[in-house]
Image 1 (tube, rainbow, N blue to C red):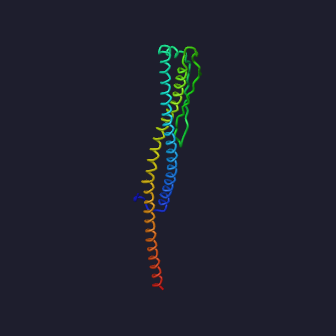
Image 2 (cartoon, rainbow, N blue to C red):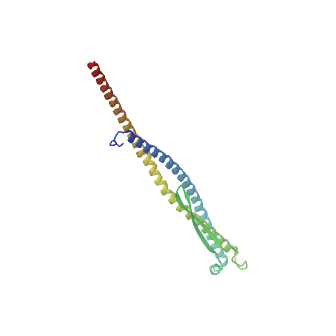
Image 3 (cartoon, rainbow, N blue to C red):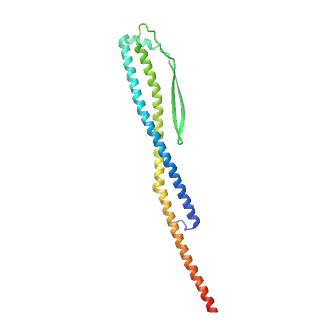
Length: 211
């Protein structure tokens, strides 16, 4: 509470306006916090799901590759790898959630199988290529989710600090200041009223004495 402010009507109105503005800001920031937290939790769930899917794809790709090596031999699999002609393109974009810029990642591949002749080769090699490609595509999405989670987490922390500051400091301070100014103004008005009444009584008694 600021007790150095002069107890005037204009100052009282100014502090009331500040209080109203702080309450409006609190409501807006509280809504922002709720939306950001909801979006953050959604992305965390998605990130956990993609992490599990990537690990599953990589495990299956490794198993397929190991099985292909067992069937055809390491040298032949290594030679076949040169026949895989796949190019990739990663497209970066962005989207905004409550003013927070979040990345979008899109991974595209050019080149589809089959990459190998069916004679003398195992389908396990094709399966391994497909699994690794799917895993890489999901890893782009997972990177998008992790960066988004970090940015949203920072913004949530900032928003919570602002909400707490308004709730615990700014709004109570303005409320106490309004109460203080109102009390001082009412007290001053009562004193003025008593003073004016005393002056009026003195003037009336003076008139009666002259009469």
